[in-house]
Amino acid sequence: MSEDRFGMPDHAPRHDQPLQSTTAQGSWANIGGGGDAWPAPSRPSGGGPVGGGGGYASGVSVAGDPRKSVVFTVVLSMLFGPLGLFYVGILHGIVALFTVIPIARTIGIPVALAFGIDPVWAVVAVIWCITVPWAIIGLARHNQKYPR
Image 1 (cartoon, rainbow, N blue to C red):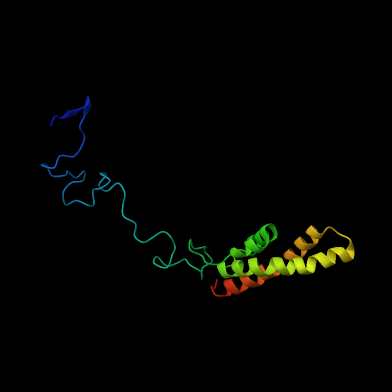
Image 2: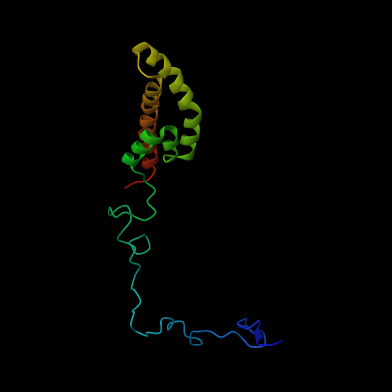
């Protein structure tokens, strides 16, 4: 077999030679090559539970903060109706999809006919009247599980 295939050099690893490492053998401290240029940190700088000084008690936001925003929840429930409740929880979104729309249609159409307004806007208003309080109450219960 030739070293040159179809005019192209063969860069495949050879099996008769061991693989070579780019770091000095037995030296994991010299991976960057700079020696003492970068001193090792004395403690983690993330402020999480390992390093102390962070977390919920000090008011510092942790990257994995499970609490959710009430304003964002209200905006999502206003824009997307029952789909916005998926932000609160999967079960909230699934239940809302099957209950809010039929209830809103049942209430909204008679209200629209009674007051002489467009039925679409009446149904949307009823959807908002159901999903926004549902989102606020569901999120308050969710956030109670996680102290500040």
